[in-house]
Amino acid sequence: MENIKRHIDKLKYTDWQRLFDLIPQIEKTRKFGENLLPIEDKEGNIQISPMMPEKIVLDFTDILYELDLVIGFNWSAWDEGRKIASENKYENLDTITLLKLLTALIRNDRFCDGVLVARFEDGSILKILKELKGNINKLKNTNSYE
Image (cartoon, rainbow, N blue to C red):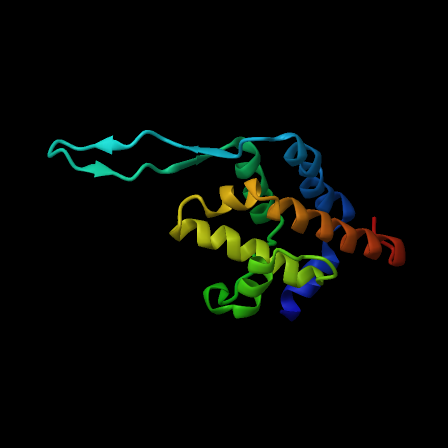
């Protein structure tokens, strides 16, 4: 995690602001995705309908990847993260833990289609982003953040 800490320290405040600019958009959004219609093949088998996320979800994911904030760690075995997410309490968590939570949600969505959309809809992503913004603002006020 030392590498991610160094990376976080190198980011400019304007980099973070790209992510935080999504907060008001998320607050205004009521629908974050929808299931496409089920697909029936030639044999009559119905395939499960994939989740089609709204643009705000795709923008969020793109920004996290572009800022290199999707952390490489064994997210699927991270019991602490599962506990935090199930309690839906993100207050007073450090920046790395918040980024690990976002990473786990993004990675999990690859295996369980719709997880990320569900976390937008239940307010988890918004709570995590607001907490992350608070952490970064504290850094900005105490350091020589640009």
